[in-house]
Image (cartoon, rainbow, N blue to C red; front, side, top):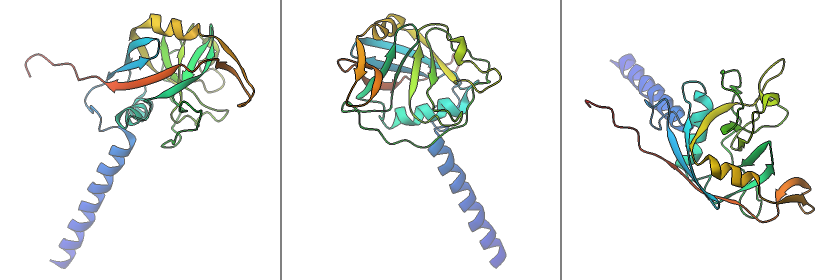
Length: 205
């Protein structure tokens, strides 16, 4: 009886740990939906993005946990390069670095390409250094796809509001002396809110 009780306690602890780990990685958010959709509201309009959890499960789960906590709300698009990318998700309006959950595994070999109007994760030189920043491709960026080296993980596609991406790509930018960064919008362009949309209703359920 003593050993049985210890076994049950250990089993319950393992189950609790497993549930906790899943909740931390975002896999608990619409867990049966391979293609979650989010509404992204910006200063220049709104868009709907479909995420591809089938091809990029780690990346989509990671993105959704920031969405769930409202962590992308009121962030700034800090890097905009016409004909290349619109990048944001990492800083507030004063360009303070926002907290991150941690780095995630690079899923750039998932078959999704950095084509126009796709959404991909930003990262540093380390291929597995992505955490919360992401970017919209504003052209077919073949140089960002994997080859001999790791690429940049695509995990979504703009379904509605592609014209908003075009508007974002056209804002005036300059070298920011205070930050020491190039391609910073002269006036802040904000990502106001990201909302997870309801799951589609399946007929017969």
